[in-house]
Length: 163
Image 1 (tube, helix red, strand yellow):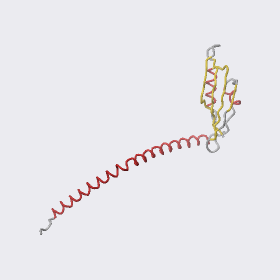
Image 2: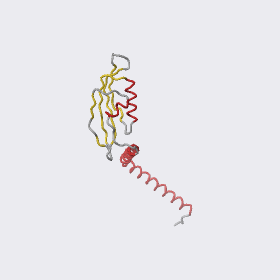
Image 3: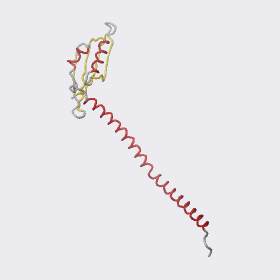
Image 4: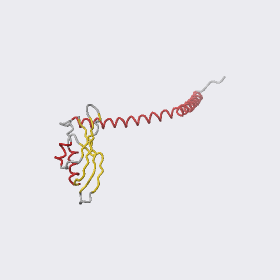
């Protein structure tokens, strides 16, 4: 029986290491093929959770801005409209209040105008959006009147946030 030389032992060890590496590579490829759908699903869930986290951060930021306002009570439009320069609407109706978070709510109001100056309406809307807490324009349906330039008939829907 011949003795194994150190060189021969190294070649055998290298061959075994190569064989083990090939076996593990093939085994890992098989496992990855079976698990790739699960891994992709987890990546998708992670993307969704990051998007939700970003959205919650925006909500927290907005809530903090609302909490830092001195006045939290949503002012009634009957009081704000004359000061904003908008003529009294032919009809003003408040919609249902909707609860938000931590005592905050949204409220909608629909204003119908039979005849209003466009310039005054735009300036008044900007002033309403500058109030704190603000009323903001959600929807508008306006139609020019034949009586003269800059005269409108229309319907505005506003939304306000307050406590």
